[in-house]
Amino acid sequence: MDVYEAVKSRRAVRGFTDEPVSRVVLERVLSAAAWSPSGSNIQPWNSYVLTGARLAELKTHAVERVSHGDPWDERQYQLYPPVLKSPYGERRSAFGRERYSALGIAREDLEARQRAAIGNWKCFGAPAALFCYIEPDMGLPQWADIGMYLQTVMLLLRAEGLHSCPQMAWSQVRETVAEFLSPPDGLILFCGMSIGYEDPTVSYVRTGRAPLDETVTFVDG
Ligand SMILES: Cc1cc2nc3c(=O)[nH]c(=O)nc-3n(C[C@H](O)[C@H](O)[C@H](O)COP(=O)(O)O)c2cc1C
Image (cartoon, rainbow, N blue to C red; front, side, top):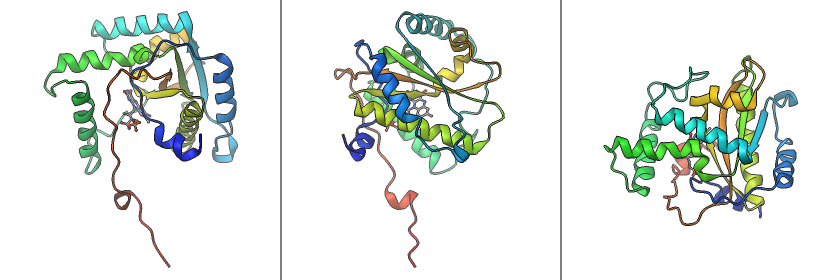
């Protein structure tokens, strides 16, 4: 698969089959992703991969928590700015509309939206998950490094015929995740990532993108 195809076929998949993901494949992907760039090559990513019975147990615990309406764990970072100014607010609303319409859920049906959100903590059925942590004293450039690393992981997964869904939702139950992974004290859980083979029977709406001239300015000499 060439890079353009990997980039264009990657999307946040929210329906996976239970076909297991081979440990050999995961090691190949993560070994290659380690070649992602980072400022001064400090490689600030700390990844944990969870599969099998332990992942099943984590999903059960997380879903129980969320279904009981337990409050989220104290935030380690802000998911979005409190006010998303234009055009970002509009883009976020458009995403929400598209996502819920694909699921046949009316925007005002909070209960159905909550049920759909619970899919996050079931990893949308995926049999493997990656959790990516960063040290608390790292700054914005290192968070950007982590983003590049995670995108590299997701593209390499495509090359292996796999799909993924990056999920900040896991940060909302980070203490439950920590019970399973025992990361060193203080590490920040940036996100989880569901990994597996796509379930083609799950419907979705492909997200769009802003036209190039909204996000790119060419300055010619
Ligand atoms: C850092 C990050 C966190 C995300 N968190 C979630 C999440 O918690 N749950 C979810 O369903 N999708 C999550 N997404 C997926 C985005 O909604 C998705 O990438 C975006 O809508 C663009 O769609 P696409 O990836 O299918 O092209 C996340 C994406 C990123 C990059």
